[in-house]
Image 1: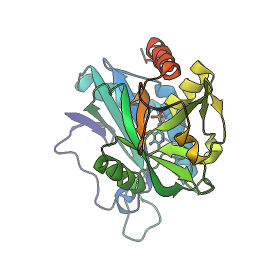
Image 2: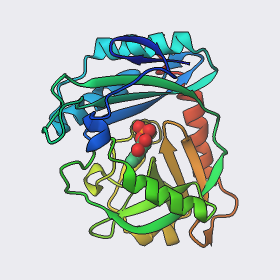
Image 3: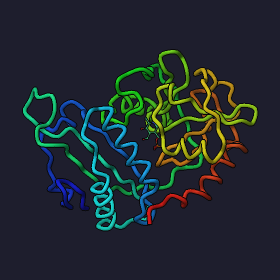
Image 4: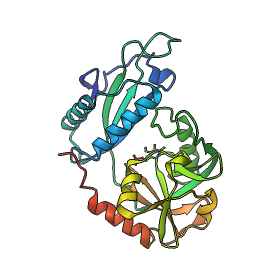
Amino acid sequence: MKIWLDGGLQDMESARVSVFDHGLTVGDGIFETVKAVDGRPFALTRHLDRLTRSARGLGLPDPDHDEVRRACAAVLEANPMPLGRLRITYTGGHGPLGSDRGEHGPTLVVALGATTRRPDSTAVITVPWTRNERGALTGLKTTSYAENVVALARAREQGASEALFGNTVGQLCEGTGSNVFVVLDGEIHTPPLASGCLAGITRALAIEWTGAEETDLPLDVLERADEVFLTSTLRDVQAVHRVDDRGLPGAPGPVTAKAMRIFEDRSGDDLDP
Ligand code: PLP
């Protein structure tokens, strides 16, 4: 397996970054996960734009989009697979202990892993921890993902594949790696970005393609929603058949099933050539 590091392809087994890389020591880094179908990245321009927004939010230099595109193309060409997940990681780079930021410029790593299509429906839990809708990192896709790792581990313990967070004012926010949508009286709603959720690329496409509304939703909407679904790069649109102890039999319901079909029909639209 080949990855991109320090401006070129390297063997994954021997590629090394410094143990003083600030991405490792303080989580000063950002990332993107990009789906690749038959070697073609999906929605790469949107991912690169979000990478730049995250970099600016952290005060990192703007990533060079041409270099990241070249890196993705090289890694995809070197590791052919039918369905892959590109992982772009960009950190503050390395520097002496105690330095505010790496002194040798940012680190860029592009790696690729195989993935598979997710089941049509899944179980989720809610967690008692909150997303901070007004934090310095709110809405940025940083490598500081430890809280998501803890929440996801709790979901797995309970036979679920995702954990949903509310925010500090009790509104529904997002999952550890997905955005959440609910269906109420036939209408699709999803929390607004002001809830503190990530501006998911699949979320934006789902809003464009289904006409879903951005609505402030109390967390307990999950107790009465007719249908619930998740969106993410690796799930696309995925129905929810259980939230905590509440079953949603028949998931995907009709509105979710339609959203899944629209997504399936259109998700070739934004594949890179
Ligand atoms: N929310 C969080 C916290 C995420 O990490 C992700 C993706 O990893 C998403 C939402 C979904 O975003 P996207 O559709 O761009 O994959």
